[in-house]
Image (cartoon, rainbow, N blue to C red; front, side):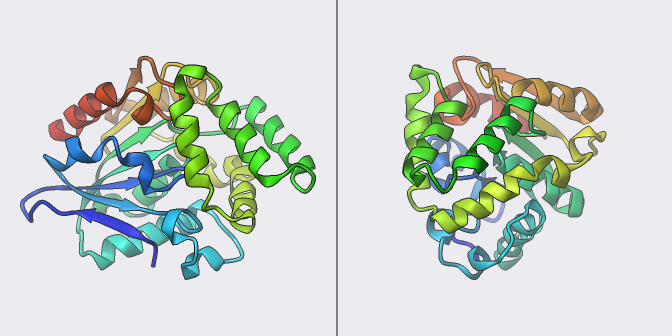
Amino acid sequence: MLNYKVFDRGKGRQWIVMIHGAGGSIEVWFRQITDFARHFNLLLVDLAGHGSSTDCKEARHTLFDFSSQADQVMEVVEHLKIEKAHFMGLSLGSIVVRFIADRHPERVTSMVLAGAVTELCWESRMLLRLANLVKHVVPYNLMKWVIAKTLMPQARYKGSAALFLRSARRLSFENFMKVFKMVSRLNDQVGSLFKEQLSIPTLYLMGEDDYFFLPQVHEAFRRGGEQARMIIVPDAGHVCNIDNKQFFNEASLSFLKEV
């Protein structure tokens, strides 16, 4: 089973299941725990191959895909006997949340998709093609640094890049390649998922400087219908929950309490 951490404040409180992105870990939520645990029970999950889930049997699967990642998260939810929860995903974790909602809509109270990734733009596809060409030539740590600087290039967001690199240390080269292949097939795997009208209350939270993914999320929000909301986080890049903790926490908690 995947590694997880629970902050259980009582049976009368609703749950939030928090899912990090590629190369991350549950550590990415450390700026949310104190504020969120005042109002909700929290379940933080390390995806297969990440954080302390590096050696679990799921990490040894020959194939990583968003569908299996969603199933593995739900295995933890079932194990803890959580009947229904809010699901919060960061970056590629937003796709895992979307797969969960598609497969188990009765278990999802709402979705918060932060730094959401709904499809790959041509710039990100070109980056992946380049990385694929040099993956066996460029040192592994240098490749991770390049990815961090590409997604978070602004100097004022260096804290987010540093956190990504710290978390990615536990991602082995083998698991990195599995994640790389999963991301390379992102558009094919996601298909029309983010082009459909939503039946579950959903909040997109995007950093104003998240230039790689913001345009595509605008389109997903537009197609989401009445259940979709979108808030732009000022003074934030891709990892908006770290870059502007106060705004992110207030906006997401306001949404979750209202739902």
